[in-house]
Length: 287
Ligand code: PAF
Image (cartoon, rainbow, N blue to C red; front, side):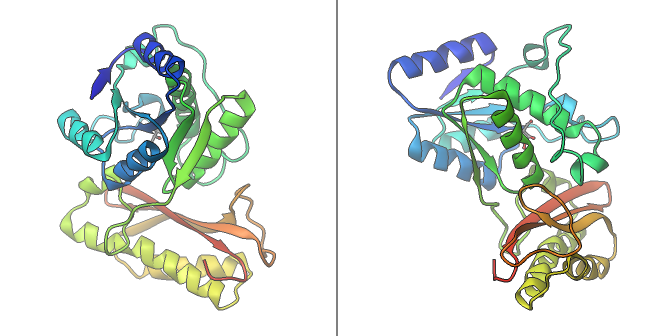
């Protein structure tokens, strides 16, 4: 496994790969890797000769009272996960490397970044778009792989890559879940045993939305109520949002048209831990 720490070395390595006719993918991460990341790395390796996993806890996407300091970090563990999943390179730059002194450029994506996470975490998606652009410019991959768990993030990244004409394909793969449905997340490690048990409500709420859609719901309110009912039935869950939205634009009309592709998005707080999840459906049909 090759470990690269500087942008210059990363770019040289990537260019050498291309000169040798190799296809290179990247999997951007903030480390503390789980099976979701491993599945992205394996899938990327399946279709590419080299897979760069970037590990960088990006300070600019955390708000002032969020968990940047306590975000879990374990490089040796991450190294093992990348190795076992078939990754070939870890790119682990420092904060100074990614944000050189005096750096004063950021990338704000309007529209899809504004509702939901954008409203609850001001500045978050500007931090995400800026670091992902910086990573893609350093790694210059043929394709970048992301997990669908961060659904709104994938819309923001697709928009940014399209608008800036970055020549990397954006590939989004399904959320990997625990046996009881909880989406895998580096933040699950914060949950106490009791909170971990309650956290299954997110998946159950999404399944309730699915049932409502399957029963013929077209109205956003009915789908939202199905999710809220499940979440409200669990003590200790504070709902930031649980809402159906158009899966491409995140628009929230009162009524969805038959055949519309929608996403149900949830964000809740359980104690000091914030969890998000989502599921996509087609109105008028089962998922
Ligand atoms: O999804 C994440 O882990 C991060 O938001 C990302 C895409 C690596 C940017 O820091």
